View 1 (spheres, rainbow, N blue to C red):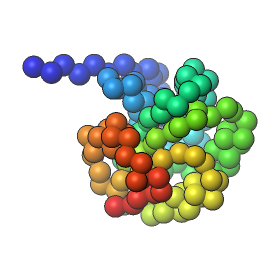
View 2 (view 1 turned 120 degrees about the vertical axis):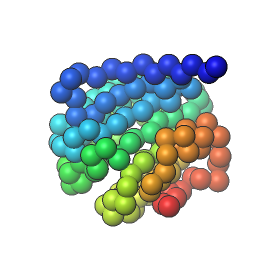
View 3 (view 1 turned 60 degrees about the horizontal axis):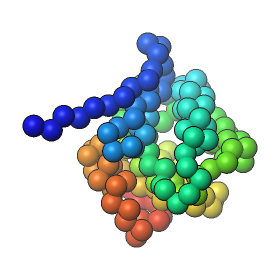
View 4 (view 1 turned 180 degrees about the vertical axis):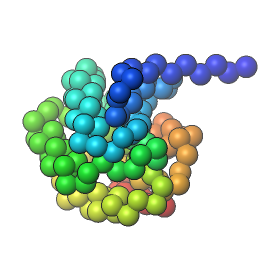
Length: 149
C-alpha cells in the first residue's frame, strides 16, 4: 500500500493554496482568481526560490488554474515581470500550468517566451496532476518550449 503525504500550508481565506508534494514538487492551486491570489503566489514563490539550492537542481512546481481559472491577466503579468527582475531565480526551473480551455493561456505562453526565461514550461489544457508530475520528474529536455494541448 502506497501512502502519499502532502504538506499543505494555507489559511482558511487563502486565494492561492500551496502544498509540497512527496516528490519535492511545489504545488499552487488557485481557489480565487484575484489580485490577492497573484500576491500570495508570488510571495510564496519568492520565499521558496530564496531557499532553493544554488546549483543545477531543478525547482519543480505546478500551478493548477482549474479550480478558479486565470487571475487578472494584466496584473499577473505586471507583477510577474517585477518579481522576475527583483528576485534571484533558481538556475533551472520546470513548471506545469494545468487549466481547462482558458484562451488567455496562449497569450501567457507568448509572454513567457518573450521574457526569455531559462525555464522549461508545459501548459496542459485538460491535463491531470499525475501527467504534470510525471513530466516534471522526467527531466525531459525536449519540452524546453511551451506545449499547449
